[in-house]
Amino acid sequence: MNTVGKPPANPGRDDVRIMTLQAHILEQQAHHPQAGGTFSWILSALSISAKIIADKVRRARLENVLGSLGSENVQGEVQQKLDVLANEVLLRTLGGREGVAIVASEENEEPVILREDSQGIPRYCVLFDPLDGSSNLDVCGGVGTIFSILAHDGRAQRAEDSLLQAGVRQVAAGYVLYGSSTVFVLTIGKGVDMFVLDPSIGAFMRVEQNLRVPSGNKTYSVNEGNRKTFPEGYRHYLDWAQSSGYSSRYAGAMVADVHRILLKGGVFLYPPTLKSPEGKLRLMYEANPMAMIMEQAGGKTMAGPKARILDIQPTAIHQRTPVILGAADQVDAVLTHLASG
Ligand code: AHM
Ligand code: MG
Image 1 (spheres, rainbow, N blue to C red):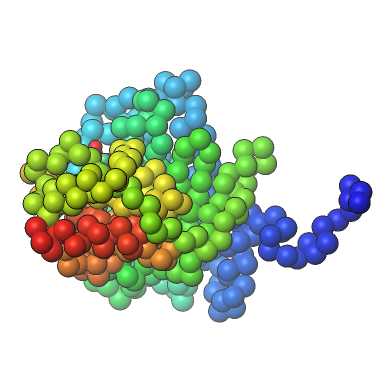
Image 2: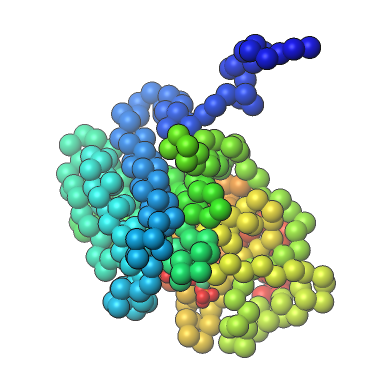
């Protein structure tokens, strides 16, 4: 049958509809008639930031913005030029949104308080790692942006009091992977959706809804160079995995590693080490948002043998945590060895 020129049989069907991130956000907002749109404007600022940063990452070599800046961030880590540029993009786009009360960045020592009074508008705190895995930039490896959104507590005495909420209270979280394509993954607490940037029209297009992390993938993702200083249980796990036919995959950028696990299964680990006894990754900019995404996709996330990442009550905005996250069956396999370690 010649169907050329005919419209799709049912253009309202989900599998034939073209859905941009912007339309997706408005669709979600329509389920909450009481929402005034301030939250949607924040997501839209993050989407615009992602497009600007994606462009800067692609053009970095041409515009000579690769390499380090010669300075260190609050974590004592060398800042790449693009770390600073990505940070500025996010601060500038989010700063213009009236729904944003406070922004906190991995790259800034102190949070930035934008609006203290609520004036009857629901306001939010946005926390982010502007360019995760930035040491991958010089070699064209995957890098990403990670963000977490919390409801602002207008009654809090200090900005920190509004920010220091356990991850279980996040209202949304997501990441952007600047890889062979630019991918935006988002949860607002009702599953995980995925969008890919169509550079020809400049819009993120929805490509997956309600992603579920697959089980049964015997793959672990960890920096094995640190193995000697991992606590004993992690070393037992690696011995067991290596004698049980596991593969190893490690991009050195959490966004790239977590994205692979979200789509294919497996487990990501950043244990305590001699150099970083609390683990290297930051609870509020990296672990919490990735944990919310993974749990919303049916996965499991722990900070060690007993503590669930999302239950940790933070005491400092830049605090670090060990991380074990991925498909529930693979996280359980790690926990079994931690318990006997
Ligand atoms: P960054 O936020 O300074 O880029 O550091 C975080 C990154 C993660 O993306 C990645 O999982 C980890 O550091 C890699 O660390 P290591 O080089 O110790 O394996
Ligand atoms: Mg990071």
